Amino acid sequence: MNKLQLFAFDNNNYCDFSSSAAKAVAGKDILLAIWSADGSKLLAISGQQGLTINRSADSIEITSKDTQGGWKSKIAGMKEWSIDNDGLYVPNDESHTILSQAFDNSDPVCIKVINGKTKEGMFGGLAVITDYPLEAPYDDAMTYSLTLEGMGALVDLLAQPVDPDTMPDGTAALEGLTVVSVAGTADGDTAVYVNPALGASNKYFYKTGEAPLAYPAYGETITQTGWDGASEISDLTGGQQIMVIEADSAGKALKAGVATITVKTA
Image: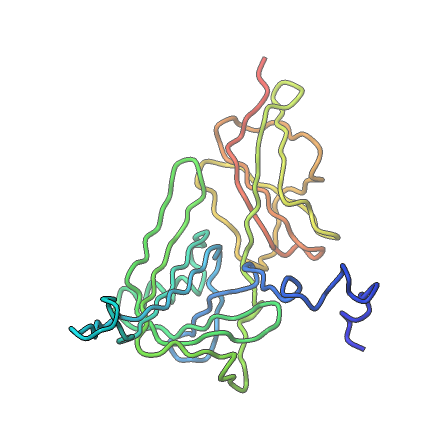
């Protein structure tokens, strides 16, 4: 029996798990990955948050005097694709090293868009890097944005699956946390709030310092100060940043976010 059928209560009159909503794909599961220059390794781009796959075609007008009704008529011309990607910049991560080298050398990169949840490839193709800025605001985390323009076809790997369907190590990227710091109840204390809530069996760590704080890589072992997620934190410096890192039970980084520290003053 299909697992969804176990929940087909009252003949699916209201809990219809076969509906389109149950089949929707969460954007957080879709990752952009790149192959190393020698094709030996597929790497999910570290720190990624936003991903947009653009597909378009030129339009060619074929209107003539005898076109009916006075309406213009067109056909599709040459097609093109591009990808916009952005997120937290993780210095010295291998994926960003490959991107930087390809940008500096004007070399194309081979990309693959994957569904990290189902472990399936979705799209693949060859592209050139046309935009790769880094932003480091004084009061927020350092970020990157990336624009890739396709060379040739963007292959639909769901329609044309490959075997083996290689996945990057970990098949995941660091997710963001919304962190807020407000004055605590006692002098010198700060209260910190984090969203979304801590996952089951996961734990929090934090670090502080001048902005911008460097983000860990996904899966990196965290050695910073542990925090229970509720207690106010003492002896912090107002105006600096605090980074809260959510790690799994083994201390491997899963999510992170920063806030400017606000402390209680007399």
